[in-house]
Image (cartoon, rainbow, N blue to C red; front, side, top):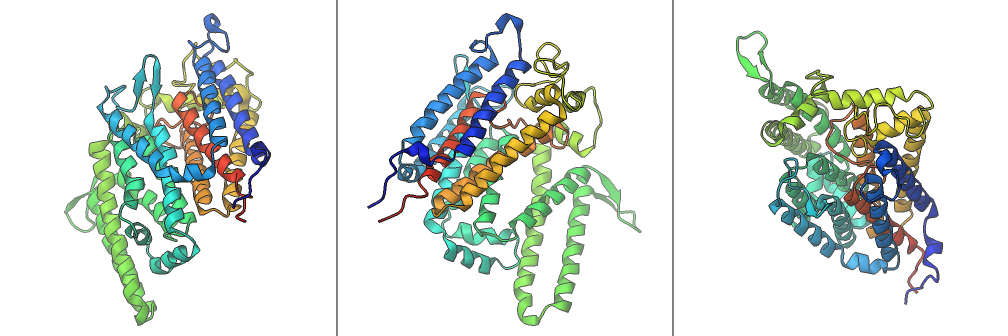
Length: 461
């Protein structure tokens, strides 16, 4: 029989909950400053973005309270059902009318719901459920042993245990790309960090770093051409990359043959050949996706970050004005509602209440305020990792890392967009950017984690 706690609120992590409320309240005040209109100065005016954000926060808090009174086993039991429901919504939204060129929203009067935000909750729960059912230290050790020095191959034993596992991650990614929503697709790759934590594919981070390097090089040179040294043969940039991969593979093969004992060479040759095939396929995938999948404005955003084009008053206007607003805040900022660039009247910074909400905050609070906000998010991320590591339940640990990975990606990319280190791909800042779907989804992620963590001291008797 399982022991019960008399007071659910006594076992909550109040440090995380305090940061949650602080971020939400700071976010609402920042949205208020970003879109301030003297004709609609009321904080609770539902015709304004800050009024709507307060309403969505109220809905989120209500849903969060319901979650806190649920049993943890209920959440575990219906994890796959929740995942299935979000997949259904991702399919259904593809049949709606496009908004700004994408089918990402359900419209109900003046209210819009973005199912891809809630899909993150479904995928996190389903992945935690699957690893809980099929994981454990013994399984992780087996995967590590089989993975060897492989890169991508380390993931294959994990997937091959149950072929349906591939769909947990792949299916929502495909459906999101069909909308198309490249930003949310990138966020879904954060779940690879969870697989790394659970011991599946010990070299997956190395694979990701190499993949990013290859992708950047491909994007930089794929549409160029050059002459093969000492010849008059003209090659495309992509062909040049593949030739370079062939040469590198040959060099590593010679090194293996020269410095590795014969009995160990076979597995290394397999890993080397597999890595080469994956790299070639990846180069073609990146080039094909860039040329045929991404829309023109998405390509331009990537080209701006990579420095392939410079147009500060045209294609690079968003990033240029965002950096100008952040820089104009100085050390201590201009004060509340005193932003000269990131405000509703000037509109020098586009989307100052959503994608570029960090600009409004930085201009009004300066370096000190920006540092404070970064410290808050860092504290939240560290606390989530601590929560994950103190669990005896595999399900809760995996789910905690899913939540932490999602928050980390959103925080890193959103701030990166504002300071020009990441392409503008429409990633909201958790609890800070305006948006009903995003604040509800982030709140659900966090309240589910708090509920699961609150039961960590319940022991079987």
